[in-house]
Image (cartoon, rainbow, N blue to C red; front, top):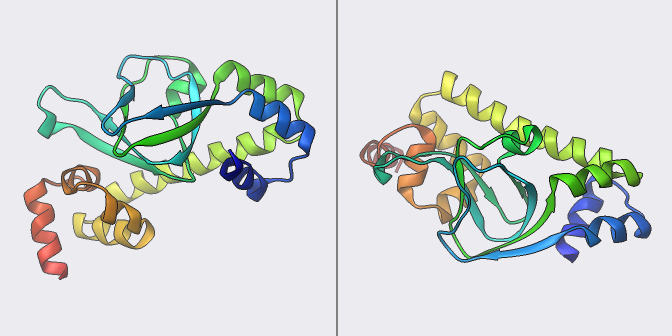
Length: 190
């Protein structure tokens, strides 16, 4: 939990009283590799900080090869089916761990208490929501404006941990190509 506090303090100054209140509402959750901790159709009730591990956001399909990966979150980042979380409606996608993962989660109801009770809660909430929005916006713009090769190169430059740690079939889906096309892109770049 110290990593989490350090992260929060990089966003805003938080006094001990506010931290004690906030941290008392956090729930530690541990998942093994390839665990779906939110399935399509479920309502996201938590926003979580990844203390350890990696998470994939994807749209499931009957044929696993046709699943659409559209996001990754890593250690030191937040993860949530955020649209489901803020609207409290069923999620249209799933969250799955790619490695053994440890999360510190806060429920929707408890987060509302943090917003009302603490001095710093709204600042942190705004920062997290802005960060999630920017990631989503950059991805959408890239899909509309960049070639698959440009998307791969940007991903390699901006998030090198993705390239090193994520199976290529998920990276291919993320940039909108088949695994075979990704293989050709990687050959051209080499």
